[in-house]
Length: 90
Image (cartoon, rainbow, N blue to C red):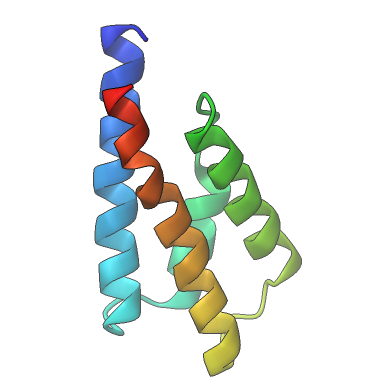
């Protein structure tokens, strides 16, 4: 992994944690989160796989006012991207 790629992944992980935390606490609207996820670029695996899964979820669930169940899935999709952080040590 190049330094540039590692920096890009670290930036993604820091950003997704912030977005997830703010959304979970009600300090960020779902539409803002959705737009942010849909604008994410490509990343190498395993992070890229999780980004693509989150993008697909938000693309197919565009409602701005989501049910509690949908919000939980939203948060889980964001958390899945962040949970791959341990792979950086490999």
